[in-house]
Image (cartoon, rainbow, N blue to C red; front, side, top):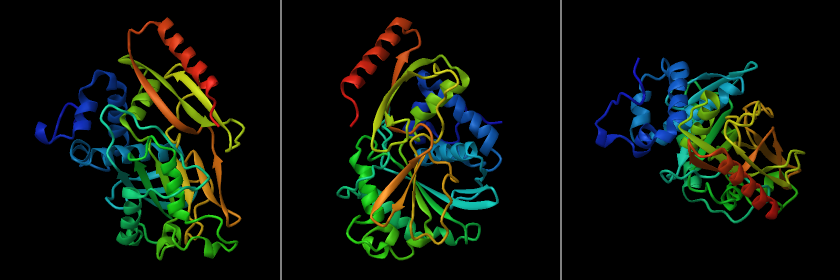
Length: 343
């Protein structure tokens, strides 16, 4: 059996730089172990060409699809990954759906983009590549391919461009729904929105994500395998535990040191439902950690399922970093977050 990282299928000069980063850096040992495990147990027989996909220019897309496969498996789906487009076919509770996956932008090597979920107040649109990808997918009409025909159809997007800005996801909502609040009639609300565009009724929803990164795999690999190549501190902002989407809380912890509480694949993902969908998805079926839909024809409503981060930063520390230093760093992070609470 081939090893994803020990055997290459193309010359060294043709390998993707982020693949080389993942392969060569000692602190990414947990991510390598997890990627290799998922490949050997989940997709090796379905996608024999995954070696070329991951190691070449499509590295980001290959990693995103592996992330989605793990997310959907954790949500209880049976996943078919044998087709190029749409990338994944899901089945659960006698319901099937097709998921087409896209990445937007380019991550900065060695820097983790923060998770930023769509906010529930629309702002001015900042579309750029994101809007272009959505309309491109609409014109391709991939819901018409035989294995997806008649199924709910989801566009899953990993957004690298807007990973550090909270305004961009709000702009995504503005782009999808149009100008909220202009009319009491739902049909008049979205003349400029993507969901109101001709043929967009075939899109059941948009799954937004910007955490399908090497760092995400590294944290989960650390928790699963107890690797000791590095220590990791994760901190940021999240929705409050009482489910009130208008209030935010903060978090800080050392990866792998939270006992039974472990990071989930879906953390930070948001499913945005299309109010005009021909084949709507039932709530909580897909497996996102939060879902958004139009409420009363004027506003969007968000429902979160469990821990839902809005921003996340992971600090890599040397494996031999003293415990007292890690504890002090956590104390300072908690002190800083308490002094500047999220509004």
